[in-house]
Amino acid sequence: MAMVDEPLYPIAVLIDELKNEDIQLRLNSIRRLSTIARALGEDRTRKELIPFLSENNDDDDEVLLAMAEELGVFVPYVGGVEHSNILLPPLETLCTVEETCVRDKAVESLGRIGGQMREQDLVDYFIPLVKRLAAGEWFTARVSSCGLFHIAYPSAPETIKTELRTIYNQLCQDDMPMVRRSAASNLGKFAATVEAAHLKTEVMSIFEDLTQDDQDSVRLLAVEGCAALGKLLEPQDCVAHILPVIVNFSQDKSWRVRYMVANQLYELCEAVGPEATRSDLVPAYVRLLRDNEAEVRIAAAGKVTKFCRILDPELAIQQILPFVKELSTDSSQHVRSALASVIMGMAPVLGKDATIEQLLPIFLSLLKDEFPDVRLNIISKLDQVNQVIGIDLLSQSLLPAIVELAEDRHWRVRLAIIEYIPLLASQLGVGFFDDKLGSLCMQWLNDKVYSIRDAAANNVKRLAEEFGPDWAMQHIVPQVLDMINNPHYLYRMTILHAISLLAPVMGSEITCSKLLPVVITASKDRVPNIKFNVAKVLQSLIPIVDQSVVEKMIRPCLVELSEDPDVDVRSFATQALQSSDVMMSS
Image 1 (tube, helix red, strand yellow):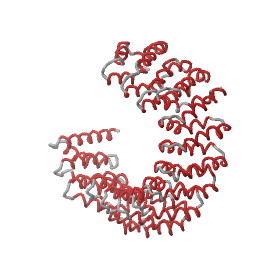
Image 2 (spheres, helix red, strand yellow; image 1 turned 45 degrees about the vertical axis):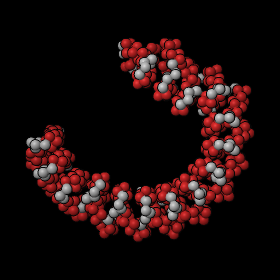
Image 3 (cartoon, one colour; image 1 turned 120 degrees about the vertical axis):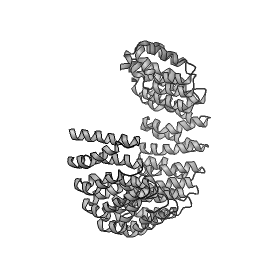
Image 4 (tube, helix red, strand yellow; image 1 turned 90 degrees about the vertical axis):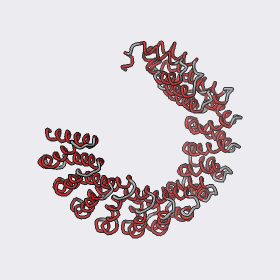
């Protein structure tokens, strides 16, 4: 609220900038409308600022978009809800402009203001606005009106409600496809406010007209309405009115419509009930899984787990699984990738036996897919399978493939494997881990890609946490410390990073006896990057070791580094010394 106390001179400047030729100045001023309004006060904002904005709406789209957004939160600045109707005229004008994003934002702001308005004000001001827009000569006004009916309808008297339903029906039959599209996409919201008696008659009649529209862009938006209307109707009405439409849509001549059906189908299963799902929706879904357009198969494959959750496991195994197998060898990598991202979720749905017999071979084939995204999607969800089939079977069947992927030529695949290793380690246990995966973890510390080396250092720390300091002292620390002599400085930096991560896990004794001497030796390195990283690591070790060790070993090393010829080394060493002083004093 400090803005209110600002002198009026800047406010005058802001008002002048609203008329400036420079678009950036106008934009800045519009974004600070709330400041101007607070300075002017509620009365002057209503009488001067809002009329000014109503007149000055022939501007660049960027400015109009900012204005539409600002006006949506302007109710407190015009004197509260009782004066909110004053904001409607400028927004009504913005609802008619050509730029879609401006209209959408104006409709959103009108919806926000309408949601706060008193019932009588809605009848006196908001409903007439909706009617004017719906009767607009230019199609943009009619497009915008469709998004406001669900705000206007609940407060309207009975006679006006009938009129609003009639107007919406006319918009659904408008000559312009853009208007029909808007009516189709907003039908669900409007239907949710309409009384049950009119829902079954008038709204369903509107819906059926939209589903038979000659424009596929209108029909595909009607598909979205299927799910929304399905939730509003009783199951028997849903079967009678919605189900035939969906079945027809799943065979529509336009792939875009079929794509929308593939995305929405599982939501309708609950609405129509188990019987209709089994007899009508499962065959429709199978058709979509085998569609000749890859985009439709991608959408259908991505929903396979959600769809199977709704069905009995037996039905899913008999009806859906054979086509899932087909998709795992689909000619499109994107279809296989979509399947790989969800197929692991089928394991808990189908149960242990079906997973072992039917799903494991599919997992293995996808793990060996030639495209990295497919392999990546399988790796990232392995834990879902482990919960179902147990670690013994997982390690026998999938572990060889995992080991192979650990050396994959695509670094993102290697990264996904590294992130999965601690989970795998905790499930496999120490013995199995040492035999199969221990050497891989060390190998990653010398990877050519920085992200892999960084993840490998974190991985080493998480393994030490999982198996304990004694195990880490035996299996990890010696190998890690050996790598500090690597001829390439980037790999030596990775080892310093790994030491800083391991120290808190290993504790003071091991840090002092094994890790700290290696760091001190590295401070003599010829590469400045190593030396300033040594300063950073020493700073992180100060809270872990005893005060005597800090005095004897860490501070002398930092003092030496603080006199280094390189400016960065001096800077980090000085920072570490200051940190050590603070620690000592506290």
